[in-house]
Length: 316
Image 1 (spheres, rainbow, N blue to C red):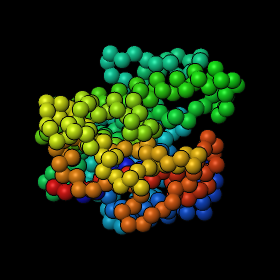
Image 2: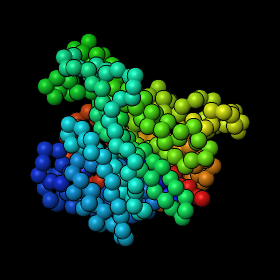
Image 3: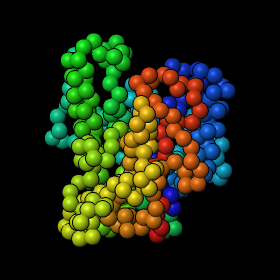
């Protein structure tokens, strides 16, 4: 089976504040997304930036065969949320946005009250494929894109830039910690016996501190000397499949001309033993990614997505 994650980039029906302005642009976006999903042919695809649930239904209707949808009920202020697009019917387990105890609320800007919830919900579900049960969490952590009071994308001075950079980092770290708590519940100290995957748009790269939080006990990452030496931490660890992606494909977005891998799949020890391949984009066709910058509205009418899907192939 193929397990994937993909940020669909502002998937809204036309006519609103954030999606395509016209029907033709909307149809072009859906057609571009559908062609990629069809080529990937995933068993389960975690998705981010679903603004209108009906838009994901429109996308599923363009695909061959039967598809099932599960969506978080905790969207952010723009209405975007995470979810699953799946061949087997996913059984929803949890849908949470609350920081775990005893983590306290974190400062998010200069003036507002501290926040104690993730910006977007973290959804977990399980599917059964040929007798094998797979439990998956999907997320979309706080962006590195900084916004300032009044909806500005540029700071008034460097002090403001530094503060808001810190606020964004506080939130992303708190959200990563919340996601790790969700993963702990799914693993339950039995990662060598349970097929568990955590996937989504982490909005940072493999070596980032926020991404590393999700891995759990350090010491046996793929490609390190400890990888071949099982230890007691294996039951609680998650392994990022990024090193298994061919180096020339190891990015899921291009920001200001710089390729970066900010979408990730992490798996339990048992699931890792069945991984046979990984990649970004589609396994057959190479589709160039656009370079994006801080102008969030520049691609409002663009087809497709500014992210590439990240996928892993698993054989029972």
